[in-house]
Amino acid sequence: MALQILLLLHLVGFAAFLGAAFAQQQLMIMSSRAGFAAALRDEYERLSAAIVTKVEVPALFVQVATGVVIIVMQPFFLKEHWLHAKLTAVVILLVLSHLEMFNARKLVKARATRGDAAADEIAARKKRHRTMGAVGTVLVVAILLLVTVLRGVF
Image 1 (spheres, one colour):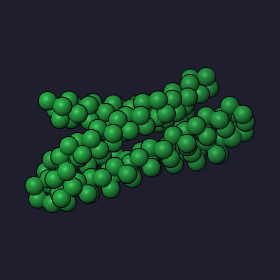
Image 2 (cartoon, one colour):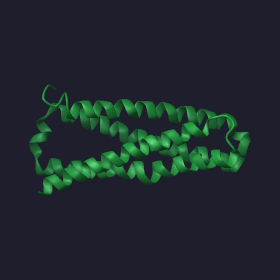
Image 3 (cartoon, one colour):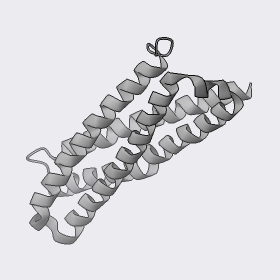
Image 4 (spheres, helix red, strand yellow):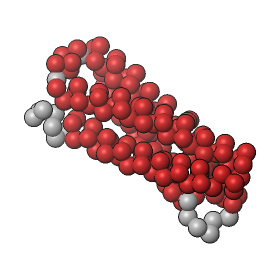
């Protein structure tokens, strides 16, 4: 029963991560559109940074914590090659989420301190944010493939 509860928490963490990652990326994309009121654009950027900080990264840590406990309870998983590939992707995803968080915070700070004078820096940060989001999407798809389709093959 404990294993099933841990697996449920692991999957809830994954769902929270996916939802937060999608939401913060969409908010950042919407804030880049032309014709948005400055106040709305700024709020979307702040919300994007807050979602990464308060939902996405903590959800990843819930997944890591529950995953570690599952492996401790069932150490035979450590002999599975697909798990090694999954853990590699998870570590990269952790780093990427932190980089997104730092980038979004710096973007908000630049907007707050320098306003429209920081337009070039903000545009570069938004482009970087989109790129990190795309890489994160590829990693999530790889993880899903590893734990489903490739689990018995790899």
